Image (cartoon, rainbow, N blue to C red; front, side, top):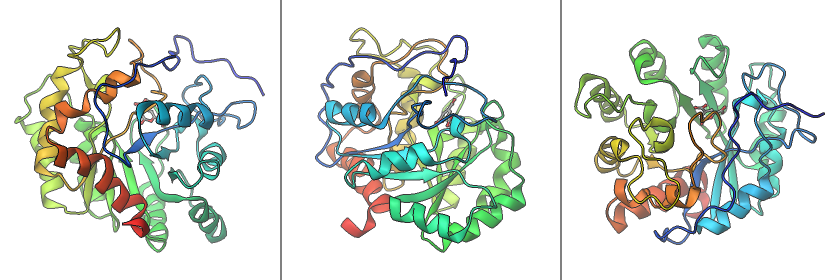
Length: 304
Ligand SMILES: O=C(O)c1cc(C(=O)O)oc(=O)c1
């Protein structure tokens, strides 16, 4: 099947620079996606956008180019609950990728076990209105209870303004809970203002909550974009990410978010995104926790 991309779609950046920042040995890109290829793994009928193709070979070439060792491939919403493209990426990774799936209540125990065997270790619950139609909470609770038996965790994606309303649901989840992109703070608001304080409190009061300190390219308002060798990209995001890394050094993850779905303004050079890391994790110890120890503990515990 051939697909026409959503109008204005920005394709991932070709020929990224080689990062100046050398990631520690064994580093994990803990948030990235594959798209199709649509011919082989069609996009879901209920999708809210149609992307360009972004194959697992292209993802793993980027991994090697950036100096990373492993990936966590997160099911993208354009594939709905059809996890075949993501699973195909895991089984073709030589054990170097783990995955996060999207499932429905109708998923069977045998299907969950097969996903586990392929390397899936979590499910994603999405509350971003432009990306999905919501799944009823009772269905999500049921799924969370079932995947808990497999030792999996729940990844949640939401916008900062929605945290108060979702608080009771999130804090009742029975597993480790990993927040995508710091719960999308509005970085024009103060880092110690009420909105971000609520997010910090969410993590402080709930030791099972982790955060990905990813996506400065999505969250930044003032830029400048990570393009053309720019060394000072996305500085407005630094205080937010740094606060989370320094306050919760053992519960943070980092990922490229390649191939960066739905960016409207520019497509970042992934090499320069890696060069953003030392601004948010400022010591070798923090960098090792963020890029190696934490993702290994969550996704490859048997190797620790
Ligand atoms: O902000 C987004 O548009 C976005 C979309 C998806 C997805 O479609 O799965 O994943 C992300 O991590 C971010």
